[in-house]
Structure formats: structure tokens, C-alpha cells
Length: 320
Image (cartoon, rainbow, N blue to C red):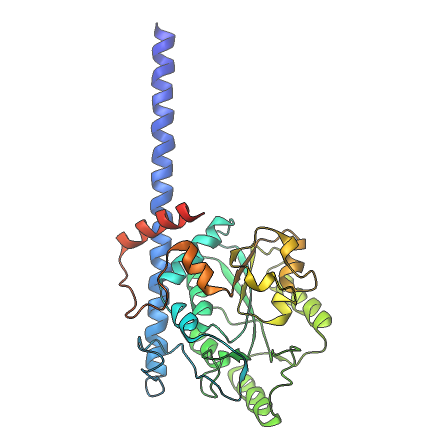
């Protein structure tokens, strides 16, 4: 009888400890999602101040400062305005935070990020998420941007990252021109000169490119060196050819990449996956927000509160 009672007490205690741990873990994760969103909201306010006189309320009704123009001399390809606005929602930072934690990223890990200027909102969301987790970021960013991205002479990713470093975020390890060959051949000499001068003025390293295969190996070396040989995850933001490659299936992916078979082996995503580095990709915004229940093109932006992110965490978990 005593043995049976002891067994029952032990079982009940184990059950209570297990559920207490689950409850505590969920609370901690919800707090990190909330913190990621707060980080992003603070960045938006900072950018809003920097670009106060340049924001067009017709195309950026939430006045985030993270929306460019339809076409400029820095535009490299087409883009969807509503998708760009969708990514300026601070809830996007919460989602990125959730996905990074899901693949195992934790405090003091190093996250390699390959971005283009096409989605300033996703850049801000990813950096905000990494800050909430306490992870280091190693960013290589191409300057070219699709429509409505960071495609204005006074609003390039060079400017965006300059403002982010003023807020204490990690400085990018490298910039490149981007475009169809990663060398910015679509840009005029005048534009190239302007970008070189701006990068030099801000103290950023600008790589002018060689060939896609050479550049991929060069970038990979930079990532490994900056992360001390231990990359916890690779995040692709936008459709930069060197990161996504030429696979028609790769551009349709979103969130956590489940299978390396869908990736171009000649791309950075393919290379990282071949080394068993978890890969996340943020390009197909509509499918991403549809899966995880985020609003499409929200006007106004949702309000931030701790309780909302407890519910968001439950929703994200159910979506997986």
C-alpha cells in the first residue's frame, strides 16, 4: 500500500513539474515575442523621426518610414506595395522570434543573415527578434531593392543600417551592390559612385562582386569568420540571387525550410542547408502571414500588449 501511495505521489509531482515547466517556458517565450515587437516599434519610431519629411502617407499610411518608391534608379525588380507594408507590422518581429526559437536559436548564438534592400521591414523584424533572444547577428546585405523597398537615394539599406547602429544594433559585416549578377550592373556609374561614397562615409565595407559562385564562397567565409565557425541559423530576407539562387521552388518557400531538396545547391541557402544549418526564408510574405494568422496590409498597425503575444504564441504553435 505504501509503495502504491509513493508511486502515486511521485507520478502526481512529476505531472505537476512537467506542466509547470511547460507553463513557465511558454511565458518566457511569450515575453520574448513581446520584447521583439517592442524592439521593432522603437526602431520604427526612430526611422520615422529620421525620415519625417520624406514619408508619403499615400503609400505609407502608417508612417513607418520603411516604404520607398515605386521606381527609382536603385530599383532592381518588381515588388508588391501591400507586401512591403505588411512586413512593417511589429507582429512580424514576434513571428520571426518564434521561428528562430523553434529552430533552436538561443542567447549568445550567431545568426547569419543574407538580405537585400527589398524588405526593410523584414530586416528590422529579424534584428529585433535576434535582440530579444540575445543572439548575435552577422548581416551581408545587397543594396539593390525591388519596388517600394529601400530604393531612394536618401533611404538605402546603407542609411537604414547606419540608423540601426546608432541604436546599438550590430554593424553589417559586408554590403554588395546586388542585382541580377550581384555586381549592380543595372546601376549607372553615377549611382555606383554615390553608393560607394556613402558606404565609405558610414564606415561600411562594400564588396563590388566577381561572379556568383566566387561571391557565394566569399560571403560564406565572412559568415563563418564572424560567427567563429558556429552558425545557429541562416535567414534569407528578400530575393537576392546569391541567397535564393535560380530554383523556381525556392522563391515559393517561406518561414522554416523543411527540405534542402527545394533549394538551389548553388545558392547560399543551399550551401547552408548542406552544412545542416537551419534555414529560414522571408520572401513569400502572403503565404507566411496566411499560415501564421498575421493581418495582410494592416492599417492602422495592431497595438502592442503582453497579453496579445501570449495569444500569438498559441496561434503560431497551432499553425505548425
